[in-house]
Image (cartoon, rainbow, N blue to C red):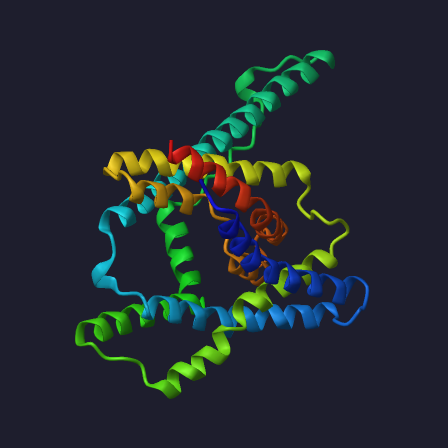
Length: 296
């Protein structure tokens, strides 16, 4: 049984996030304190400086020599399974749409020709060939080039290199450097939530992506994701506490920094902002339910 004090501590930690988001929303919606360019500037600062420094801090302070390999393997397997499912869905949906378009064009052309009193052979109809999909290598190479432009990539590698050296040699980062980084990365989460609030305030409706897509994203995040994680954990051989951690972790909401980069690179920022705001709100009861079910 989860004590009420534990639930209160979770709410106590979540409340400041919504405070920052509400402040950003009110500053733009009612106070008109920031223009669109100024909101973009805040988000750009977070994406370029605050989040990369936060990522560096998180990676550099994590001991890579004491990580659980099976837990990492289960998490990786979950991501691979989801990626394969998305690729299969994209291939089936794309191929089916192209086939339907070609068939419809051919049948429609024959019907029009017959109605006009002119009957032509099927082969005589000029049907535009389907547009070929780009090769996988080209897509992967393009994605790699974009990854090299993201500061998070370099922050992750630098943090990993430092952690490998520091925990092996037993050294610590100089205090002056650590404090300098602290000043920057402590702004990441608060300004990210503030930026998400300003984004929602600039939209025509409170749920920018619509209620249907928002509901679907919540189902995928809090139901499909944990189920796939459960299957991946069983496949790897996780049991007991590690299994509970893996499933509950999969049910945690999206990181607020997901919205920051979605807005920075203009990739479905409406869905990400909704996922962050609603996800944090409903994650508490969902994780409690999973915790209770796993304890049976």
